[in-house]
Amino acid sequence: MTLHGRLLPRLRRLPVVTRLVLAVALTMSLVLAGAASIVYWRVRTALDQQLDDDLTTYQHSLDHAVRNGAQLPPGPSGSLRQVLDAHGRVLASSHAIRHQTLLTPADRDSVAHGATVRRDVGSLLPITPGTLRLRAHRVSVDGHQRIVIAAVRRGHRDEALRELLAQLAIASGLTLIAASYVGYRTARGALRPVERYRSGAATLADGTQNLRLDVPHDRDDEITRLGHTLNHMLDRLEASAERERRFVADASHELRTPLMLMRAELDVALHRPRSTGELTETLRSVDAEVQRLIDLSNALLGLEELGSTGHITRAPTSLANLLDAAVTPHRRTAERAGRDLDVDTTRVTVDIDARWLRPAVSNLVDNALRHGQGTVRLTATVHEGVLSVCVTDEGPGFSPDFLPRAFDRFARAEASRTSDGSGLGLAFVHAVATAHGGTVHADNAGNGAAVSLRLPC
Image (tube, rainbow, N blue to C red):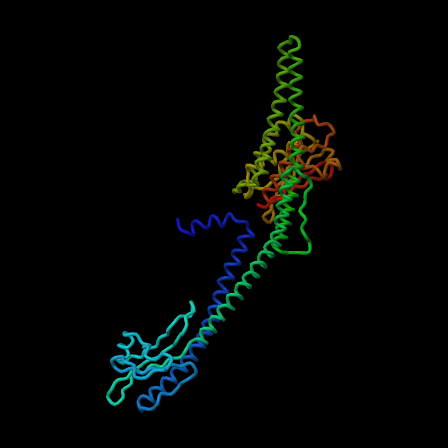
């Protein structure tokens, strides 16, 4: 495994603050190293240029003196000179180096063949004494070849560069420490609300109710928006938990009633011998309660399926055929009750999910037959891409205190909870309308109740 492959998993396990500080430190290190390199390069170039200018000037004066057989000039402060013959013997030299040869045999050979040698003696780091920069080339004197060497000391130049390196190192180190500290404080300050939100979420996980995160209202940054989003999520979770508690309570009551009735019927039947007719009547009563349980379970399953996914599959559907399929199961019930069931629609094609809309319309018709009176009218129209379905009856209508909660689960207008129906019909219609991106409205119109669906199609 490569070094990168080993380090990356370890870095990912570090806290976010540590990773941010490391990123800031690494970035600042690269920036400071680049800036220091540029500064060092520019200063060294300037110093080397000055040193080379002095060396070139001194070299020209030495060349002129050697050609004319004059005395060698002293040159700038700290300069050295040396003249060799073609065999490398020292003919003239500064007192400081006497008979020490400044050139290596390879350098002498290069100069003897006409090349100009430029070379530094000694290093900047580690510190070495007697550092020089020399320049040597060949000069002809009366048919004889001479090697003229001019050298200047680099002590001041090297000292200046070493001082510059020290200052750059100190300045870069202090800047890096300051940047890392500022990055640490900034990261801690930025992530402090996140930690507070995490603690709040942990408190919620422990069962605390009515929890809201302390989010400032005078800011609009990413962390603040996260806090508002979490508060919105907590509100929805609290509302969902409340609905779940209410749902469990209502469902348990709805399921308990038919089960108790079935148990009572069976206990009475088993208490003493019964005739065939009495047993048949008991079985019919039990069958009615079983059917009630089945209807309740199907309604609950349908609501949960639609509410958990909110997914519908639209497809072109004949509106007349859909309404006919929804109304047909209720015509016999209407005939037995001596009531009329009218359907008024046009033959158009709508883009809806018939799987869900058909039972929703069927529930509206069933409610009108079950709780209303007189003629039940089903009207459906399409205008500007909106399907409007309205079901009305001629009964007493909805009570004023029931209308605000008409589409709640298990909501009933009757005082008794043992009446026919589960209280889920209108809740299912509301869920279907919401899934289609539409609305549903219940009201009292004329001499009865009216429930209207409006769906984009």
